[in-house]
Image (cartoon, rainbow, N blue to C red; front, side, top):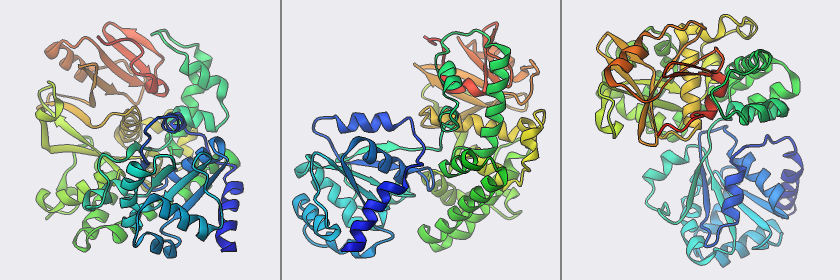
Length: 454
């Protein structure tokens, strides 16, 4: 048992460089909740689930224990028979040669999808072991749990983790004064030009690096964009390996085809997903299950077309017309082989691939703001608004612009037709009002909406 004990202690010392995440506050709230349920952290591979829980354990508990069901298959046997919480705690304490204090020890079940019995045990921790602080994390868990009868529905608290937002990127890059300035912005007033340019420059960098914690950490520590690209390429490949590991055999080839077609699809003028772009013989019915697999896995976002902007949006969406965005624009840059020199050329980055990067980064930010689904609006061949979002039962159109042109033809078509109370353009331009259209600089979309849309 010496190895297991050392493993836990070493984990405590090697996570010094974990990047802070804003959702640590949600974990603190969970800790302080009475009648607390076990917490399950959902998210795609490499978004930092395990690191976040270990940082939480280090900062807010006397000790923590990480039980990795993928690396250590021997531990599975501890869950084969009796799932009573006291029995499991006793077995874990004996195996790792530590004392688990119900008031001071955070328990982390990592890669829990690899041990269905451990996942089922969370139900009993909810019913009989609420005195223990039990958390679980696993890559592709959101996809796996839907297929497992043992998932403790209603017996756990679910928390979703996405790639790091731009504000989290600023925190990681130790740009605290700028972060606090942007976070304190509360009115539609142009920012000082110097601050605007600094924020925009950092946002360009964020667009290239993306929100994957390891990529951000490598850049923060080395300043080397080529080293970032190596990390991005490894993550892209890891997702492909996950296809073979987790998907049904008859879906693996389709998943790979869709995955590597997304940059090409987004590079089109009309970014609607076209199956024939995968291969001439491709048909929607053959690929729908594979697309849903990628969506459920959290590594792509599907944005549905709506021709009639009414609530509820799902009722008016066209299931056969949609765009696919990657969960992280940094990975899109890697898959598109975008050279790091594009970051230095401030006039080109956002317009690369016919604006694909800017649409993807806006989709990423909208999902980071806890949007559950993405929608866009079209009116035949006349106009297209990139995103339609809902705030307090108000539908708000959002048009993305790669440059500083004030042209907004599609947005005006929408406004003239539906008379929305608010409309948004997001671009490299400064914060300002243009009639009933508010321009949000790309770096400030995380603060949307700055005014009450009611």
